[in-house]
Image 1 (cartoon, rainbow, N blue to C red):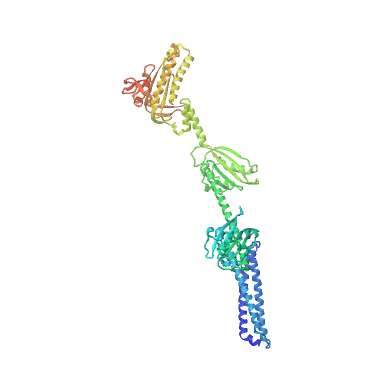
Image 2: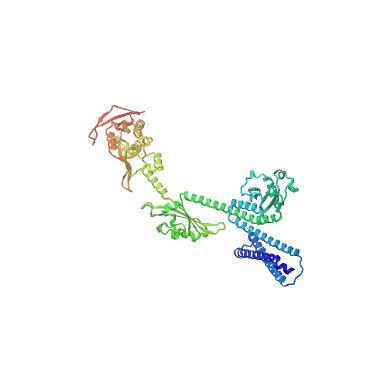
Length: 637
């Protein structure tokens, strides 16, 4: 009887099924609630994302399953209650067993679907756990091999630039990487993947050895490939590659359900790969921008001109090392501040704030504004005027919109100092030394010590004798012209040896060697200059009438003297030498016989290998307690 059966084993079975259904119902209900929170709450604004659509589909399946389980539970309850109230009726046991089997199968299918959805959801979370491209590829292969229980797999991507198929990664079921060279079926995977990418249709074979489409490939037979499955990776209607899995041992490893799951998986994998690729491209772009910025910072840091830039609001965005040195302001005190605040520490005469304000007010013209100022900057050379040139221009983007200002500060201080030193050198020396010496002094002004220094020098004194006789017999203008001719001849001889003319005293001149530029052979230069003077004057005398001929006397001495600028500051100054060495040279010139050269022993000791002299003799001179040892110069080798 039915009632008896229900009260016995059959009743127990129904109650067990009822309890299993209610447990499944609760689990499906909880799962549906979690999906609702994610899909309709957290991701409500991202319904266009394929992954969110996949979760929405899973939510719908969970809801339907939840409702179906509820209906099944209620039907079981109604059956139990009806059976308990009905009179005994004949009902074949086999019919009830069949209904129970169908119900059990339905519950098993629902469990499998739930497990598959949970697996896909877990895979989605795993794939989205990183944006590192190589790590995403490894996760994709490990997940798909585990998901479909394949032996190994390979993932190949289409290069976005060339469109060529590229081997990306191959893995085995133990999550070990397989190099391309070691993947024996690389050619098989390439041919299969090319076809899948071209057709955008997945491919499945449960026995490659019996598949006529693949059997023609010799490598299929050679490598014993049994099961193959391949699916395209499609994102934003663009096929970016394909996933290939196979097995060399199991036939019928894959079936249509596996292919459906692989397609669902590939939809998620394609998005993850595309995101990782975009992220990699973004990182590459960021690195390029950083490198470009670093390159520009290096340029700004290395140039001698100060560079200051602001954005459209006037906030300082660039302040290079040269600007810091010129303005004597540390970059930390100005970066990120408005220029009005940043430059309040500078004196008003620096005029930076007014300069930038005017440029900002007239930025629509985009013109270059130039201004030159002379000012004092605290922290730089005390009481020293700084000369600066400002160049300010507006910064515009490609659309012509104002985005800020650029200020270039050209520090002309050192240049103007150099120019002033050059003018000073020319004013002091161009009349006294050879032009080549002047140019050397200008190129190396630090070699010049105008303030005075004590050093060994060689001094040449020369005077023209017979000046009084000429003055009595010739007009003054002719006498002056004649004296100047003689002095010019002597000066040229001194310049040939790079000597420095320091004084003209009527009909006499004084020249020094080893100043202002160092001349290690200054004694020999002085002697050679004196001899050239003598020979040139004698040659000139031969061309002049007897009545206009004059004689001369030359003295040469070597010794320490103080050399520098002598005279009233800002009035009349002369570069000359003072000291005993100069006085002795003057005394020698006063005591030498006409048309001859008298050389002191201090000079002779340095040049004796290059000169011919007369016998030495003692010469007493004014202001010297002991006589000098001197010689007449007879020739220079």
